[in-house]
Amino acid sequence: MNCVKLSDSDTVIQIEVEIQKIMPLLCKDCNGRRFPIAFPDQRDALWLCEKCKNFVNIKDEFVREWTKEEMEENKTKLENFQKDVTTEKTPEKKRRSGVN
Ligand SMILES: [Zn+2]
Image (tube, rainbow, N blue to C red):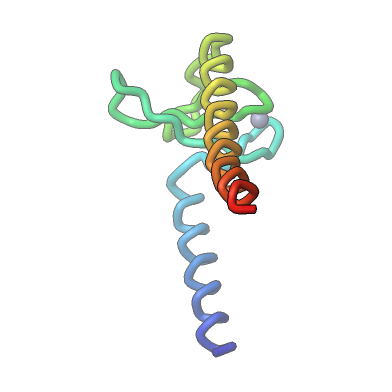
């Protein structure tokens, strides 16, 4: 079992290294993680650094700043996601207390 686990993590590390060679996974300015954001009007995803609030393209070239609207949109999405998680748990609790 241990052997299987070890070889699995080796593969994961190898894939990570491969990706980093061809994608701007890390921000040059703050060394933070960038996230690929897909835009419908663009062929390739842009890479966002949430700390520096800017986008680079696949070649790690600066494209533009992260706009206020996009930040708000991102915040709303996150809040909606958290709301979904909490509302999913609530009915279960209600049902359980209703039995007694
Ligand atoms: Zn950064």
